[in-house]
Length: 539
Image (cartoon, rainbow, N blue to C red; front, side, top):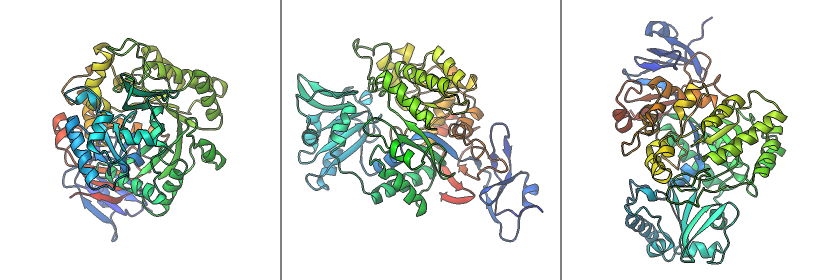
């Protein structure tokens, strides 16, 4: 007996996946795709209680999958001062915005801002401690760069963190000074000196951030994401908050949890004792991998490179962890059954991580573990070959090309900068590369991501090595099927075929046929479904 559909979508251009192409109608039963085909074929599955949605000719696709973002961070940043170039294009604008927030913030309470990019300021210089003191002398203030690897602190924040002109740089961190005096800049592990004294969010605040960030993703057509460093803000309490959010119906999107595993901040040991290893959970909330930070960001000149940064002959970036520690740690986690998804942007960090993965896989073989290299910004050709041979997945964010491509050229030079995040190469090698936003580093908006995939253009129009451009259907495959593959879930989601989850996004424009500029500037998500339930409706 043929099942009667719970839901039918019809009168649309429904893109099921690269191999399957378009159909006009789709039926859903018990949260999964029941059938796809012509209107007549699908309407034959309609019953008395079947809900019917007329797409009015619009384009629909599998729900988008962001391969790497910080869901909690995305939710919390929504309440911070907006320091992005679009809202604060100069340091003076940033000072004004912080001063406005200070007027409504009780004295002594923290003021946080996120999103500045000094390479887009007219001066090209970071804000300073003195700038922030001018804006809010009676509050501790932290302003975090877009990349999340550099924070500027004012005098009160430095004092609360116990940082003085004589404080030595911590391992894997940099404390900025000008003429021997603190200038407020804290990079990589040095940020922990002030983060450790910022009040920890309550469980309810964590759940609220999960819910707010998740609803924001749904409004963009994103139905699944990876939370890229669970434990970074509130430790193990974040796992508890995710579970409570799920039980309370306040987890809007599917989340693949990546556990923070860095020394002194790791939540992995506690999770392991509770049996929370890779694969634990369900299709809504699942333990995915463990993350270690091996270097910083290219735009912040802290990604670990084999060649020095342009104009700074002694700066090769920051090595976060020693080789022996990384090799031993990766081996231990691999042997415990975890997948790893470690941050490595510069070619030296990528080399350290590939070597660690190769050693672990040689000692304890697993042909389908799918260890990942998060960002994987500037690999050498031989490193790509080794990744392919070992089954290691690149997990880049093409939104970086759009937002930061010009900064890469300015700090690395054209030869290295233009070749950033070579996704076309990985696709031709059959490595199934995924993509994402690293929100709140970039906005989770998928349209700049898609624009960069099909044009390799930055916000200024610079073409970042057009040999890495992808065809339209491949680009959309990267945002859907390959995102699922990166989570070992390609049999569950990422395509609209019978048996897969009915996670669907409907857009105002056609992502396969409209011009890149229309996709970037005019396209909106109008409807999002999770398991065949409407969870966002802008109509």
